[in-house]
Length: 431
Image (cartoon, rainbow, N blue to C red; front, side):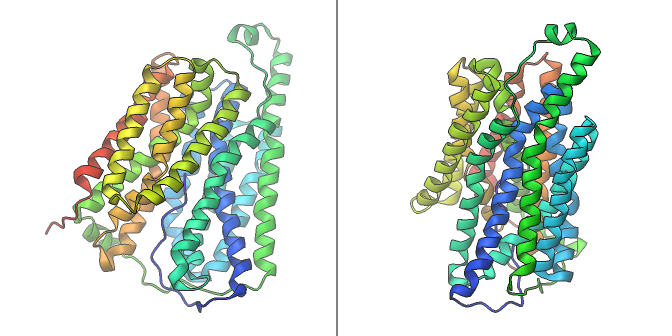
């Protein structure tokens, strides 16, 4: 998933210009990259642990649920942490929590216990939620207010690099390239199966130890460097305000569209490797590399091209065109064969690239003083990434491993987004 749109907040930091904000912004940019790495490794982690633990599709998709449930549960506590402790201490707290979660991959691998992996991922998700909640507004105040959007776009670009880099590193260090058929596994003795399981599961250690050290190292740098102190001094959103802001029809549809977008993106990346192997005729290493080189590069191209196209198209029109493209190539991925399946899924990534920030921005139109409540709801809609992938897994299991039929889930998601881009986005407030 990509970084959240800038959260509206007031703060106590003094803005200005000069090199004094360069180091703080570089540190914040690291945050964008770190959580991007975690999210985009899931496309490698899911097929790997599915193979290692011999999981069903539904069980393997719980990896997504573990991380994205944390977004839903931690969205409000994260805001409370930042309000009480400020951005710097809040960021350090998030980094430490995420680092602890990543380190828990070691005991999970050493004990070959899938449930511990899920707990570890949930803890990482809790830390990342705090980081995402803090990083956007903190980046916005690190310099001249007039260039805040530029800094946020740079952060998004750094995050986008992880879409390309994470699958390649995951393929290099996590995938073993060893594939056993069900018959071969059945022919193994208990000792042989246990040895194979232990070997496969332990391959995640190096990658996630490095990620954990990355979180801790950045936390130490935030401690050591003198950074601008800032707190979110805006008023706390009351529960009653959520009911009031939901009277805006376009916000309701934006929350629905965001729910389905995040679910769609997570579904596509989660099954990319397995679809490429099953229908594209490649092995796991080749499939993982294509997730990085093809899907990742096209996602980045879409992000930058989308920014340029906003000069010529309205946000709603651009979202309409991109959702049509995503739906069309989803159909091609479902009906196609061979390499067409791989290229179609990659092109879907291109069309998904602008959806999250565009839906977010359209949902906040005309909310005025209700903007903070509206943006909180849009962030909580990220829970779509926890709910829809297991649903997709259920369909695939029900249809005897027919992953193409499961791909109908993101297809339906894109049709919902298409409706939002045509009618749902129009601001209407009901009395």
